Amino acid sequence: MSIAGAASASADDFDPPLAAVEARVGHGVAVGGGSGQFNVRSSALTFSALGEVAIRDTPWTSILLGGMFEGGDRSTAGVIGGVRVRPESLPVRASLGLIAILTPVTALGPVATAGYCSVRGLRFCLDVEASAFVVGDDLPERKIAAQLQLVLGVGFDLD
Image (tube, rainbow, N blue to C red; front, side):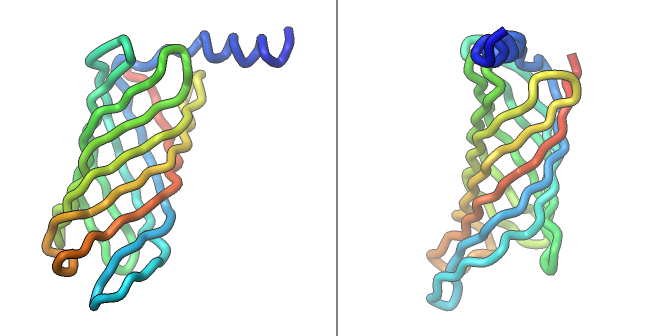
């Protein structure tokens, strides 16, 4: 079998899950403004657990919901929710939703993710995730904070 045939066979064997859970860890860069200055720094190490349930099969669409925790010198906890879409017969995915930091401070904004997951057994995933916090009591007045992270995940299907 040719390499192209092998790649095609693995993509054709991919079936998105009806329901799944995933543990994730991410790290990257954070940007923000405070005291009138723009700064770039290493983002907090982020841990999250997500669940997803399929709601449509063409294109494969799921609802996501989960919790998150940021470690480091300022630990926070919150929730993530959104919609994930997977193109037919490909082990790639994209999602769009909201992220809310709820304690000990508040921040809310959009989050977008795109990535790839292995197709057999225990799934290993690699995503790029961007989030922007636009409202909350932890933001300087008239400023936003954003981060871009590389996220590693391990998931399995519940169906």
